[in-house]
Amino acid sequence: MTVIRPAEVAEDLGDKLLRWLVGQRFFRTKGRVPTSVHTVRSSVLIDGDPALVHAMVSVDGGDPYQLLFGIRDHVPDHVAHAVIGSLAGRTVYDAAADPDLMTALLDHLLAGDSPSGLRFEADQPIERGVRPRQMGVEQSNTSLVYGLGVLKLYRQPEQGRSRDVDLHRALAGNPHIATPLGVLTDERVDTPVVLGFMQRFLPDAVEGWAMATASVRDLLAEGDLHADEVGGDFAGEAGRLGAAVAEVHTALAAATGHRMIGTEELGSEVDAMHARLDVVLGEVPALVPEETMLRAAFDAVRGITGAVPIHQIHGDLHLGQVLRTTAGWILIDFEGEPGATPEQRSVPRSPLRDVAAMLRSFDYAAFHLLPGDDDRQRAARATEWSDRNRAAFCAGYAEVGQDPGEQAVLLRALELDKAVYEVRYEHHNRPDWAAIPLAAIQRRA
Ligand SMILES: Nc1ncnc2c1ncn2[C@@H]1O[C@H](COP(=O)(O)OP(=O)(O)O)[C@@H](O)[C@H]1O
Ligand SMILES: O=P(O)(O)O[C@H]1O[C@H](CO)[C@@H](O[C@H]2O[C@H](CO)[C@@H](O)[C@H](O)[C@H]2O)[C@H](O)[C@H]1O
Image 1 (tube, rainbow, N blue to C red):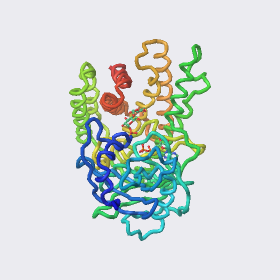
Image 2 (image 1 turned 135 degrees about the vertical axis):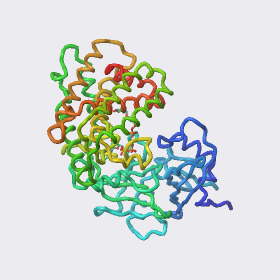
Image 3 (image 1 turned 30 degrees about the horizontal axis):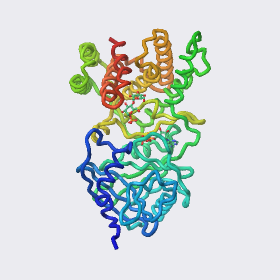
């Protein structure tokens, strides 16, 4: 009789696994057809029917993905959508979709001393036997809600330390983060890899992006009223968000250290902005007419005479990374700058970089309904919304931290640098939206 070889489930599934992976949001090797899978390491966490296999699987030799294979003789209806293929008459599927196996997974981890080489270090007591549900949001990882906690499994975990975990732990007790509850580590390798992070689940959380865009929609639906007159005005929230971001910055500076930089280091920042622009100009011809203006805005930073503070910041702040709860604004996902190496992400930065990123996000929220729309009145309303909320955010920030308006030259350069990044991001990922950052750059000419 043919048997399943747990250590080679990925190889034995072969093309079926590749086809499944290509359809997953977390699969990053888009644009070319993958051809091979290789199990870097694996452990059988549960043997029998069902079985659970944890595997780190490399595709075409790239950084491994974290996969959880469920294996059953007969799959119940509720996991039918997660089937990857069959082997030796048994069905193999994505176990993250199976609450029974995910209940068993957490219990296995909490039991400790696991021969599987997976270790869960709890920051707070965690209840056992809780049946989870998958978060079910658009996300690049996989999150499971276990009662009061949400466990995020990193689908393509980074080697070495996790910035997300380290900064959350450094901020433990801060009211503007989701409390860290525990960390899942892979100890089958010499340098442990963080595979998962559990944090307090916030059942009443609403994403800032959802709130902001609902407010914009309310304004655009009104012919006669202004931003401060419509029901869904967001400026109060924008101000509170600014204060929350400033509080987190102050706490990060206190917990992880801060220092001042002068002309020389600012000059290196400017060089980096030019280098990023060089890349995007080569890829997106529509940006070429803005080159002179952009370079002048970057070079203006060389003229800043006073010292500028730097410390650890969020690094990827936008309205999709902030949640409004009944207790206030929460910042999530401190993984840092997307696309950057772990070393680049851990470099201390000006907190204005986060401010600039959030200001860009207000512009996105304002204009996301308008690409391809040349109705001047709607564009004027969107501009009104953006200006009002950007100003409110900065005013809220200034109540707690340094007034961003006092560093207008640096803020402008950072905002344009972010918009250049966005032009490239949209060009590759959401071409319909490329007009949003491009128009913002053109407006600031
Ligand atoms: N602690 C939490 N409580 C409630 N919802 C959360 C929590 N953390 C994240 N979320 C929700 O899950 C989404 C994805 O989370 P995120 O950490 O950004 O995952 P990813 O890195 O996979 O994109 C968030 O946008 C938010 O809607
Ligand atoms: O996946 P991440 O959250 O790390 O960030 C990436 O995707 C973001 C889009 O979801 C993208 O953000 C851009 O679009 C947002 C609206 O969807 C907007 O609020 C941001 O200002 C804009 O940068 C982010 O750039 C990208 O890295």
